Length: 389
RNA sequence: GGAGGGGUGGCCGAGUGGUCAAUGGCAGCAGACUGUAAAUCUGCCCUCUUACGAGUUCGAAGGUUCAAAUCCUUCCCCCUCCA
Image (cartoon, rainbow, N blue to C red; front, top):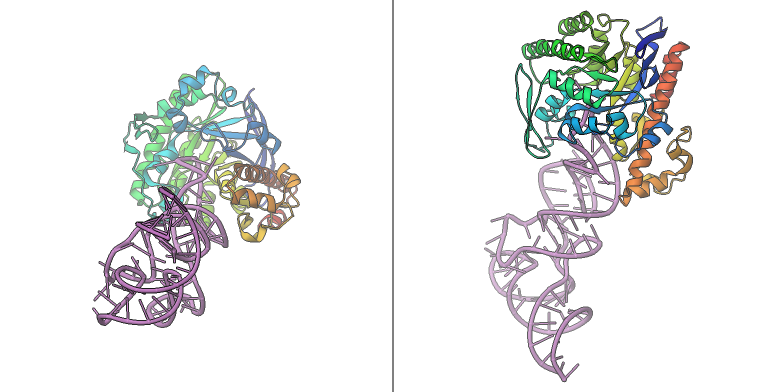
């Protein structure tokens, strides 16, 4: 049996749990973190470096790979695992997030009403019942992504875990739009599932996505929908609110209604505090661009630091001979000083971004290891205090 | 010796009578970033002030003018070309 999910321990006081998640490319322990390699690359890191930093599973994106190099090319090259030389478990996102982000900007832009003035041409053209029409930001060519084509592309990419197409609903829409959008995502879910079942070769399993914005009744309805269908796993998506507390509420309002035997993924979330909070709502896997993105922007994630991190570009680190985090076992912290990495950022050497990416990836992996251990030993509160001040 | 060009805020470099505390870029100081169109973006960046605002600036010193970085005079310093 190439796929299975087994809950190995349940926290008596919350929905928190540990699990063992088996895929054709290996078994991972949960809760775990899935690193974003959107365009078949976790930016700045080789698969070997990811492994060395303790990573178990990575993710790639249907939309971006559809534009370039195209699913047929990847299939011709032996599939995404072989193409990018990652032999572990792999997840692909469906492109649902791009329906949102290419139409509305990023999460922060959308929630804050896009105050930064930085207008990009919209590259999403139209969303209809049939699917979403895009104009490629690469060459302007038109693409039409449907639930069926999203599954077909993901089949050609060949990740272990794939996702139904959904519309990632923005925050700034009213309830009736959110409800209509959710209903369409459900129909897209059925179509995705039908297309997946039609070509099922036993090598992939599919996630259904919970939508419903910040509304408890809609979230419940969406959870019940995914649970009633033959998805292997559940992902929580869509607008999770305008601030962290609201996000935790939205995830928590799903917990009672999500299929309890299936793995649960929370899409796009990944700070320390977010992991602790959402694990208690039963989240088994997370993914987030933040660890690798903020690394490229000079931020090191640090256990127990104020705001969970330090800005290595700050002048105070120019002559600091200590490692980024003396308690961190990663190769960056074992071999390099804050002073050196600060210097690399100052002069724009890409090694700086790479060293911090290694550190942040290793730190997320350490976090997840400690969270798993904490759940098993019922010490989640104490471990959280070590990580989040 | 002759002819010409130029000296602007840490650097490069606009501006050639008022809308100039002075465009830009770089450097500097901070910040944002959550299913990645992100090695991106934002703010600050003479002094004092939270801000309003005030005070000193455009090689130096005088002068013309209601008003000068911009015009005139002298001086100092740099560069190019011809000898």
